[in-house]
Length: 217
Image 1 (cartoon, helix red, strand yellow):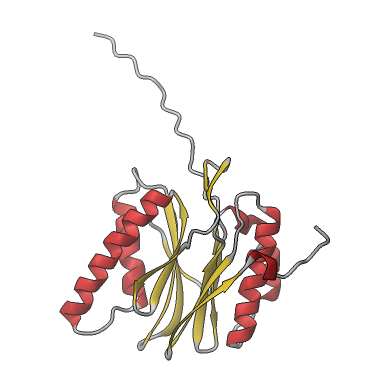
Image 2: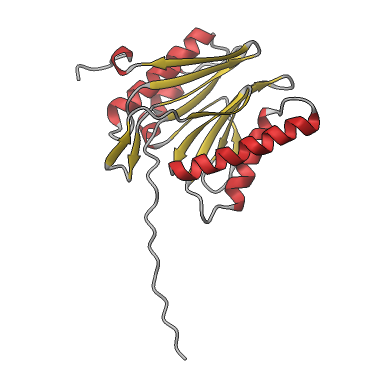
């Protein structure tokens, strides 16, 4: 009996966001915009926080399908909490990134979500890891992601410098995300930043009317 197969054409999920993480002298800054959209056409939220805490000094930013990303981060939180109880110490940043990598890789046919993981631990200090769609894991001093990132690669390459101060890195992250928000129609809202150091965690929100302006618009 002859079988007929229909070609399946699945439309990719728009990442519709701008996320960033950068290492500075003694810590790391991770941040994002706050706009959530459906298919890049309908803005469903202007105030969503895409910087999610998975352990005391470990955070991740999400890009892609919000439902997928929330499911992965919820599972990762459980694994890391269980891991810290077993080890009787906080998990390493690489351990958190590896958990996200395994979840993404093992479910790569179903998930449409990518992550930036950043944090501080006693072994390696401040670190940034990228978990791409499909589960690839990379360590980088600075990284950007989401649809808005395509507009700011030049700025990030030109302006990021190793061993920046905390204030310099915060301003760098704010400027980069603000530039992306000004060009990318599915990035917007406010800028959420989290500063992670040995001393603790600091949350910073930069409202839309306080963002730096680079043109007359």
